[in-house]
Length: 328
Ligand SMILES: Cc1cc2nc3c(=O)[nH]c(=O)nc-3n(C[C@H](O)[C@H](O)[C@H](O)COP(=O)(O)O)c2cc1C
Image (cartoon, rainbow, N blue to C red):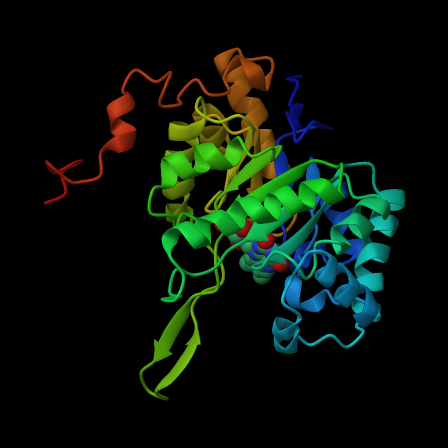
């Protein structure tokens, strides 16, 4: 039998398939199901920055020590929402005692100072690592590119001061200079980067003239964005890479590892096909490895990265110079 184990964020995973952050991992039962179905690790449903609120006095004390202008606290609702936070830390500790696979906590964050102390509580509850889902849509016309990009590094630096568990950063591809930005983020001390997040997207109902949610799930053709960037960045980063978005079957899982991913996150396919899809995908991986004579993932990881592939230019081709495959 092939050895599917991998290292991600300094953690030993029995296989590279991580159940990504979603409603499937918001309860202990959900996480146990994911483990029972074969997931190598689980990222818990994110707690959102705006849900993280402290005892008011602690916040003010910490903020004034940091020299933060206290006026801006009017923007935030600092009621004590202890219940939500306690629920999240309880979810972590109960998952840790109920499952043996790594449990990665997740925080969805935008600004740097209000919630960071809370990260320590996630570590204390037993989280094996912390995934920061960080994003602001570049539709904020008041902040410059530099200011927006600097915020990422500031948040990472602050969280690193607070926790000692590995940190993964889950990002989008909305950067003006994506390759160098990914490279710089990989050098910021994070243990891993997750490429890429997928977002809620708006659509328009033309009968009701209403803005509605577009499909929340990805489809297999969404694979190519993360595949391209995992392949381009694989030999250029100083941390692990996890692929995310559009991985719906075993072939896509294999492609991401060939491109250079240390681990691969899956969500939509588990919603659409059920959690049994984890085993199906891992079976496909094992069968393919047996057919190719590969015994472990390191035998082929990154073999098709841009740096190692025989056709590196293919990853940079973006215009349809000629018709392909008979399309006309
Ligand atoms: C219903 C649903 C809930 C999600 N919730 C979160 C979340 O809380 N935090 C997060 O970082 N990503 C969340 N995601 C995004 C997924 O973790 C993942 O990045 C995205 O769905 C792309 O992967 P996929 O193509 O395998 O679905 C959610 C996705 C779905 C479909």
